[in-house]
Length: 581
Image 1 (cartoon, rainbow, N blue to C red):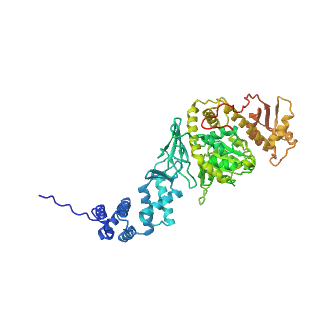
Image 2: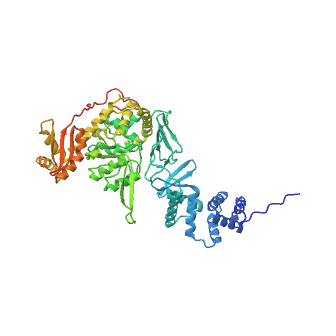
Image 3: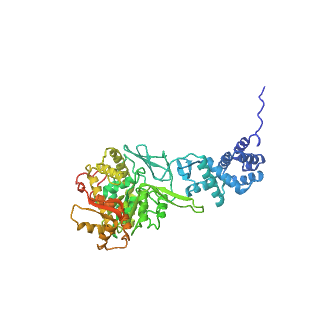
C-alpha cells in the first residue's frame, strides 16, 4: 500500500517550506514573489524570525537578479497589520546587526562589534564611523534602501546597550598588543592582518588572536619583505632620515618600544634649525609605527587636545613646537606612563567624561621643547644637524625613495625586534635610569646590532645627564642657585629657612625673572621640583620640616660615583644594515 502523500506546506504551518519551494520556481519566474501564499509566508517569517527572513530574502535576490526585493518588502509591510516604516527599519537594522556580528564591551563599558567576514574578522566600536558604514552597507545589501539618520542613531544606541549589558567583556587593542612571549602588530590593512613577533622570529597572521580595532584616520603599515625570502635592511632608514650616527641606536630602540604597550613609553624629541629635515624625519619614523592620514599635527591648544589626539592615534605626533605650557608637558608625562584626563560630560548634570590612555609621543621644534624636569626624564633628545643646500632633495624624490625602501626597512626593524627580544632576558642593569624598561631594550638592541655590552647604557646615562642640565638651564631658581653655589667653598652644607634662601638667591642677576617665585613658599615649590635634577648632579636639596620661622631646607654636597660616558666603539653596529657614516 502506497504511503499517504505528505500535505503541501502552507504559510501558516511551514512558511520556510513555502519560501524554499518558491525560490526554486523564482529562477525562471520573477512573478513568484508576488504570489499571495509567498507574500504571506514572508510576512509570517518576518514577524517570527527576522534573521531567517533576511537570509531567505537575500537568497531570493541571488536566485534571480531581475526580481525586486523592494517590491516584496512593500507587499510584506502591507500584509503585516499596524506596521510602521520607521519602527520596522529600526527593528530590521538591529536584527540584521545581531544576526551578522557579535556584540561585546571593553573594560570601560564601551560597546564593541566583532564582525566575521569572508577571509577576515573586523572589530569596530559600535559608536564609530567604521561600524556605522558597515551597518549601512549591510542594510543596503539586504534591503536596497537607505537608513534615515535618526533611525541609525536609535539602532546604534540599541546595539550599544545590547553589547554593554548582554555581551562579554573583551580586551580591545590599537596597533600593538602583548601576546605570549612576543608582540602582535596590527597592519591595519584591508585584510585585517597582523604581525606576530617573538624571540624566534616574526610572521604575518591572517587573523589576529587578539582583538584589534581602528580609528578612521589610521593607515596601513607596509607589508614587510617576507622573512627568509630576502633580508630586511633597517640600515636603509638612515638614507631617509637625518638622525646623527651617535643617536641611531637610541632611535631604533624608541621605534621598537613604541610597539611594546606593556611598558612605559619614552618621548622622542627632535630638535634642529630650519633645513634639518625635522618633519621629514618624523614622518618617516612614524610610518614605521603608526601611519596616519595626518602624520604631523600642529601645537595643541589645550591639555584636552593632547588626550583627544591620543584617543584617536597610537603615536601622538606634533611638529614645529615653539613651546609647551607646564600643563601640556605634564600631559605628555601622563601619556608616557599611562593616565587620564577628566572633564565634565556634555549634556549631563556634572557627570565626568574620562579619557584614559598610554601612548608613545614624538615632538619636534627648532628649540628644546621639553623643559620640565618630569618630562625631560622621559625624553630621548636628538639634535638634528643642518643639511647643506647641495645635499637637499625635493619632496617627490624623497617620497619615491622611501616608498621603495620602506618594506625592506620595516622587515629589518622586525628582524631587529625579534633579535632584541631574544637578548632582553639576559640584560641586567647595574644602575637604572627613570625609563629603565627603555634602557634595557636599548641595551638589547645595541647588542643585537653587534655593539659591546654596556656601551649604550653609558651613552643613555650621558643623555639623561644632558637632559638634567637643560632642565636646570631653563629654570630661574636653578640659575640663581648655581651662581650661589659657585661662590661657596666645598664641601657645601647650607641649612636655613626658605625665606633666608629666598633673600640669598634674590640678590643674583637672572636674565629672565618672569618665572621667578614671588614668595618663599613659591621658592619651596620650585626647590621640590628641581631637587631630583640636583641630586643627579651630586647636590642634595632636602626639606627638613617647618619651624616658627618657616620651612627649613638643607643644601649639601653628596658623593656621586658615575662612570664617564664613552662614545660607541668602532667595532660592532654592522648587523641588520649599516649604522655608521
